[in-house]
Length: 212
Image (cartoon, rainbow, N blue to C red; front, top):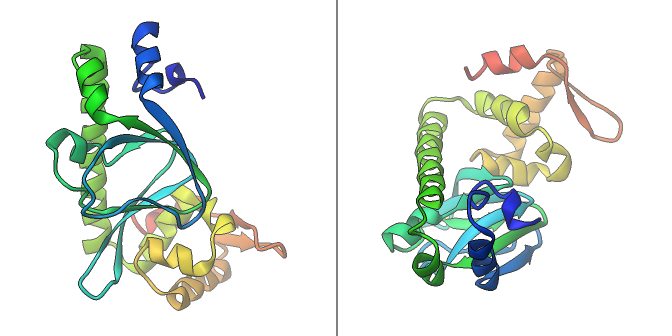
């Protein structure tokens, strides 16, 4: 992918694009590889180009609290760069992924004064504020059944890419609860699961009604 194809960079001049290319590297991650840990000091601006990256916090007992999953093309963890504080959560690849890492210190010297680029950064931070609202809503208001319905509607492809345990972890539930809910959805004719374990939504409005 050429940098000009990324919304964050498409307003920049070819000269500035070349500067960014010179301070960037492409990282390939396998499923379960860590992009950065909670508490790490930020050195790079991370841009997801392919795959899915999940963000989670870990409690004192080592339990993961899933926060959000990011798909291409999006920034992840950028606020830690701008405010210069440690990453508040861990970023882990859910499936094979590619991430562009841009040296933030060099970027801030070369590019950040560009007004168009700064506006794209503001848009990204605004999006993260909405994501935080969604996390609060999901964890404090939605039932487990509603969370599963929402995941099916918004990221149904994950059900064919991940194991039950991985999907359950994404919504902070157990594999057993996930299986029971999927069975319930099948009996209600909300979804269909074929012999190859591929899932198809039959009644999207019924699923949406569970969380909207």
